[in-house]
Image 1: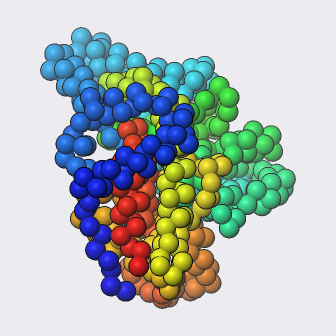
Image 2 (image 1 turned 180 degrees about the horizontal axis):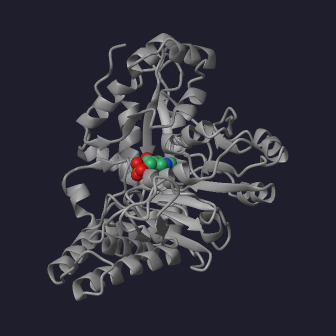
Length: 482
Ligand SMILES: Cc1ncc(COP(=O)(O)O)c(C=O)c1O
């Protein structure tokens, strides 16, 4: 198919059309006015976005930071002296104090009781998941239940589980990319195994935006499972209250919540659940004491600190941690509820506008994978463009056309192979065969199993999304109609 050139439209006519569309949107969604403070914030604190002509729609990739966050952090660094924490010297104490404050701020942000939950700082959400993966006491008799739309950083748990003799089961997705609830219910009804068993699922899929019921947490715990909630894609635009749900483990990446700093995430974990974890090694920072001479080649000659320190390998990113407190204050100041309200209203408009786009022959211009309404979904959409004959258009070409218009969307399988396979109806037997034939590259893997696309274009909204962002994207996709 010859790709239509979607024109860059910034003419007076375009602005007029957009103004009319905004009027219709605000009339039908009067609640949008409750989020006007975000427009003020965008002008004041994110002015670079519009000055540089960006349409940013990749918030699930990473959120954007406010100028004030960076300024406050810079001022702090320029007017203080910080040393490596955990010594009594003054510069070290100053760093320790701010690291501990970041821990308290994180607990407060998620309404977590400090007697119930620990905050373990990691490099990112994947680092948090790796702690659980390598330390969870899987063994013969353990069960690991995963939903098919887990991110690869959660799927990786299966490597440790299977190697230690646990049985690993995937809960499939229904046609609309929501969880097959019956299947999960029957797996839970079968009960936890004779050894520690874990259910791991995303609060919001980073692929389809589907939100899975947090009610499964208590149901699984009643059956003896520990529960890990991947909140990396959920926390930036949804309130997660750990006084209302009590998962055992939660992973977060802070840059996905407020853009800056990168390189810091955390594992929020219940102290009770942490007691079960067995660390496969120790490192500087994690041990109260250790000996070389007392080590006889077997057993241990070290004693770990209590949580959270037993899980923080080496030196934590102590200069970045004050920026976590600043970021949490920033997002808390805007209000996650306000962000949520705005992005959901915009998502509702976006889903409808994209669904309504038609080719001249009446065929749909794009296919959205996942719910076409706002029930149990977040502000992330996965789609592919179709030509008038209904064939999928290569998402790489769509991505390049978006790039050329300064529209930041992301394309591919988004580290979520299970959701990709469900969305595109990939044949599990062919996928298995490809591994049997030892495909080495992703191209080889997909060539042998599929002649169609292996992913799609993801659009995601966040802290300062506005109507112009979604309108521009719909206008861009309209450029593919023929
Ligand atoms: C749902 C989900 N889980 C986990 C991750 C991994 O996050 P990170 O790359 O920051 O470790 C991501 C990243 O996109 C994600 O979207």
